[in-house]
Length: 312
Ligand code: BDR
Ligand code: CA
Image (spheres, rainbow, N blue to C red):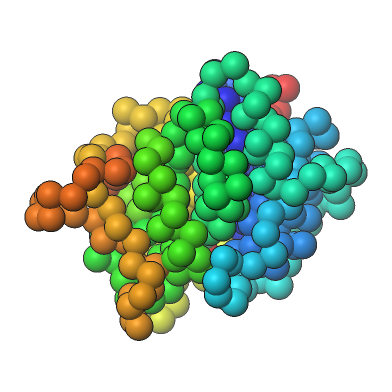
């Protein structure tokens, strides 16, 4: 079982990543920390707790992270995720208490309790992890690896070449990529391929559990945001669950070790990930970057994990 801490900003796709992490027998979710990103930090925290409440998980500790990015004002994902950050689903209010420590101290506590290094999955801006590394450098060796959703090679979703999580806090992302910790990156190049299509949505809906109902409602709302303007997808790309899917079934992905630098100064490119695919710079390779995914196997993995809920 892979022990993880999930640092997230739910967010529709974060919520599905969280559900998948809780339900998968291959993942042992030790803690959830929330970041400012898709919505204000009070809302992403509340959303994580509402999802855990729906799942009946009251024992997984949840803590809130920094109120804003390290050096910039917060840009939220309101246009994708709505005012609550999880618009479209009817979720219960949290029925368990938040941790009294901030996110970085919860991460520190969990790492200290474990006898072996464990994985931290990051599906929001990198703010909390950058702060954690700055304040607890001695615990760096307790992190087995970071699995990060963000960036893109020549592609963006909020700016022509910039992905949302990197755009929100480029300085934090730079600290994280430069930390020398094994890092697996799932950029837009792979996340855009992780679509759930009509037949997948129908199958999920047909499960008829409280979780599949919530996930269906979230996907309906989220899906609407993807097909307007000049963007067209055959289904709903669900970025963040790619991280959990990679931990469960790395064989359905392919990738390559690369040097990745995060641009922090560019007027038009702050937050861009410069992925040196052809090794043009000879800079040190600091990330295993995933570029491809078997979409059908991914959709099956999400479905079969959601199906486990009714069997619990
Ligand atoms: C990322 O941005 C957020 O809106 C999603 O939750 C995902 O983590 C994709 O760019
Ligand atoms: Ca996210």
